[in-house]
Image (tube, rainbow, N blue to C red; front, side):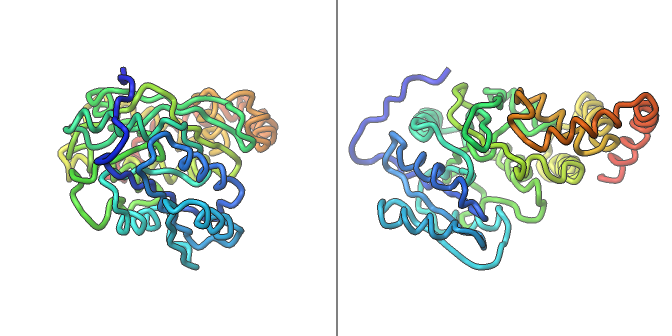
Length: 327
């Protein structure tokens, strides 16, 4: 359990750089920025990277530049991608600790303080994340994201899933392998998974038990897009982790990956997306995402006896082929 935050007010508090890549985030970024500026931990800089937005994102950021000197920004016209934008923010950031944040999420007021408190008390830890509420486009809580808390649990989980909420993490800069770049950019759309696999072998990981993030899910959320591609990429990353970082991929992990592949690779994406929502405790579906109402109609056809027999017959063969091709 996390102890009560006991950092003393005054000088010598470590600087935290909060990095927010933003692309066409005008609808939600005001809430995101305000949640960081309202943190109880005040010694921070907020580095926002406007990644080629074509909406009003830049105008919103400019308003905060006038209000709070802790807000900094970088802006350019070409959309380079989330990891490239985050790396640019990291390159100019000055903090002893680096905190990530997505441009549509909301941070609990004590998020930064509790993560700093943990890392200051545990110098052998390189990354700390948090649990999270899941909110919809209107900010209503519709579910939760719950992750393992101890290093051993997180380490053992990495071979079969991503046991950290990327926009909740804080990283200790002094233990990073590189000074000018943090996030991998070659394994999109799972760059963060590979990056954290690398850091897993540079220090210990933890997730605080408290829900200190409000993670927003909506129709355009990237978690529900390109599910098959992300899954195959995650398999590729796991095998790279074995080769490059010596991660011990066990027989049990391989069996679990086969089971995952049986579902992800043979069922339509709208079915696997719906399963994802259900597993994350999001309810009611229709209220969480209008698109789910359309999924229900499609689902009635997909789950017919004829189609169920077809999917069951294809699962293991397709799974084995997909996994072998990723090696």
